[in-house]
Image (cartoon, rainbow, N blue to C red; front, top):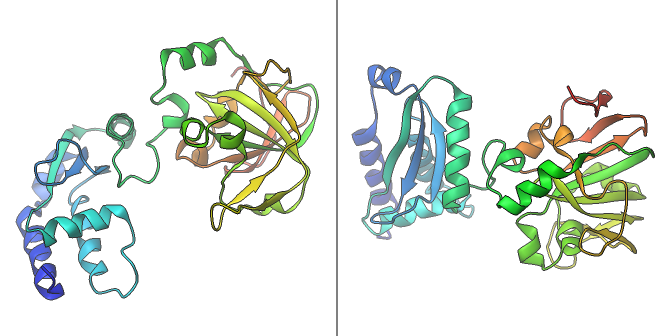
Length: 285
């Protein structure tokens, strides 16, 4: 189907058919939903909603038909493709009548970890902190001591490399590339730490960041000082549990990286990734 107007009308008809009333919305409360392609066993998108929240994606798809720019996301692309093929997507509610948003976000995160839907750009709520992990990873995590260096560090970049290790082939390669720009990349030197299941797998010192030759618009570093768990080297930032820091940072919980500073006396400060900019304690709360 190539006629844009006809496709838009199909989407509008779909929206009118599924729109729920205020009284139904009150009974649904918070809920977790998935959007499935026709006949597909797994969703291509998982979300949390109230009232008519899932339908917003379809309104976005209809609006994208009027734009001259490329389709904004894989989620919207899948929705439009379904209607072009005359196969309406299916909205399934996994859990409803949830009392709090936090309950819903926990379930959403579990489903994202399980299904890995292509339409979800980041892992769910607190997935980096307590999401999907192997038993071996969790054994490492809860056996490791909390990071609390006796030396001061002006700038330490912290990256979640769980997905990057199999893609890039090593802890070092997964840690050093390829990341969104931050103004804190403008000045070196610095350290970078790669975490998996909240435990530092590698620590690297470097002098500067550079534009990645492989990934347009991304940045990377090159290090000549490597401290890897598998390599047997030792460093006070290596093989440590970093959850005392990461669990407090919203950006990390939703898939971003952090930059922190240590005073060497039991305190850290988040330079990038949190609204809290004061010194905080690394001791048990």
